[in-house]
Length: 75
Image (cartoon, rainbow, N blue to C red; front, side, top):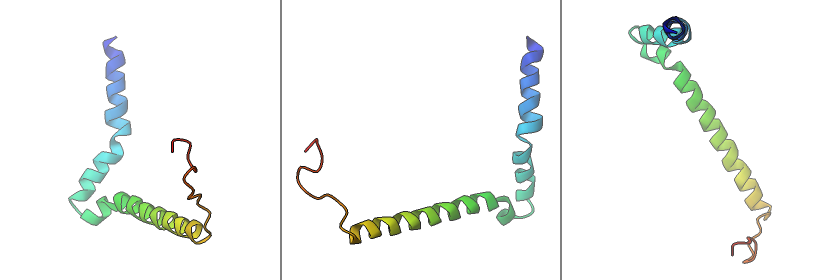
């Protein structure tokens, strides 16, 4: 049973966490290179936010929203 848990440890430490170890070593050389993944996700979030705001503006300009008092059942 002890070997089973050591096998899980080896899997995670030696294999699955290797990219994080590489990023940690890269950070000592270049901060921007080490954080490129973060910048990538920030860019995706900015594009998604802009797209969502443009879609909301398009629906508002078309007057598609039901603004009557009884539009929702809980009202």
